[in-house]
Structures are given as structure tokens and as C-alpha cells.
Amino acid sequence: MPTTLEVPSMQELKVDEINVSSAVLKAAAHHYGSQCDKPNKEFMLCRWEEKDPRKCLEEGRKVNECALNFFRQIKGSCAESFTEYWTCLDYSNLTELRRCRDKQQTFDGCALEKLGWQRPSWESCLR
Image (tube, rainbow, N blue to C red; front, side, top):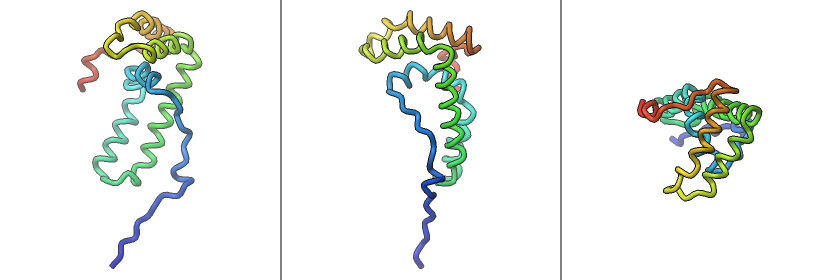
């Protein structure tokens, strides 16, 4: 007997895309990880338990929504320092990232002052 595969409609798959470069993602990674931890973990748990990404579309939407809100907050509060930081990362060799530490500290300071976001310690990434 043939199996019927239910494919989500295009409307179900429609989300606003986050159109940013890898340098932007690298610069934002620590803060994004702490700000969007819960929806990301819920999505990954769903994917693991369900073994079918179609069953996790709602969780995926929440991840996307969190990321959009995250970048909107950065743009609204710390755009200049964030742009300087990710631009430095973009033009630096991966072995020379120490050259961007001053810009990282400036961005982290802005995120703390204006958004209340403390840069997570590297130990927190181990949980």
C-alpha cells in the first residue's frame, strides 16, 4: 500500500527571513545564544523527539521570531558599535580575532547598558 506524505503548504512555511552575513552571526552569537536559548532548545528537542521537521514548524517559527526581535533590538539600541564589531570580524583572519576585542568590548558595553544583556561567560556555553 502506498504511503501518503503530507507536505506543508507554502503558507505554513512562510516566515520573514533573517538576511545577515556570517560575520554578523559570529558577532551576535554569544548574546543571541543567551537571549534566544529557550526557543532554540525547544526546537531542537522537538526535532529530536519527533524525528520529523514538519512537526516542528511552530517551534521553528518561534526561533525565527526570537532572532528577528533580537536583531531589531540590536539595530535599535547598539547599531553603531555592533556594526563596527562585525565589520572588524569580517575583515579579520580567524586567527587574529584579538584585533577586534576593543570593538567587542564596546558592543558588549552597549548591550549591557542599553539592553541589560550581560555577555555570557565561556563556561555558560558548556551547559
